[in-house]
Image (tube, rainbow, N blue to C red):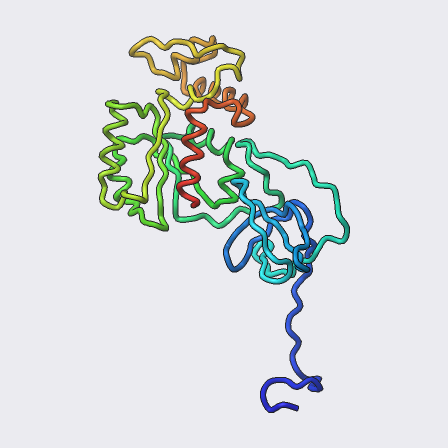
Length: 280
């Protein structure tokens, strides 16, 4: 027996813990422990005598890795093996945002980075359409309840390379009050490269929902000086006199949204831009 380590005949040597074997079935979500790449299995193939598994992330990008050790399944190290038999590729399920749905994955631990939106309704709309994607990426959406003190809020957040902010602002058009507020926020020293402020042209996020979802060709015109939400509800012929009416109106409108196809492109592009900024 060798004097170093355990010899081949030493029956008292401790056994290495055997990792659980997991077949690389289509749709299985794995993390490559070395690179941190997370994706769903889209295919297993043999190349040069080596089995490779291809993993597709939420943005549709695909990378291949040798089968075997070095993978995590819900945080557990596993030994990924070829599937027992070739199976037909499953129909890919899509999230409300249109991305490939990741089945069976627990929400990722939240990053330090955040998405800020102006209010509760903005947050609920983003959650309904992009919620599945945000949980996979570990991104939290927080309502600001107004952006008047945005520069101070950014400074207090102390953004950095691992602590970024993506901010979605209503009515962000040149020379508007919101435009000047965004300029002041981006002037905060730590904001450069770590904060992205984007916006849509609408007075309220309600308008970013296509009116066709409630059977209308366009939104009613709200008279100047009238509260926008109250005016919209009145124009639609819905109850509008109390805050409960407004809350019920929003619930009815949000309930009509099923996917990204129900939203205006001017909002879709901005939210995707923010998610990409926070996850690259």
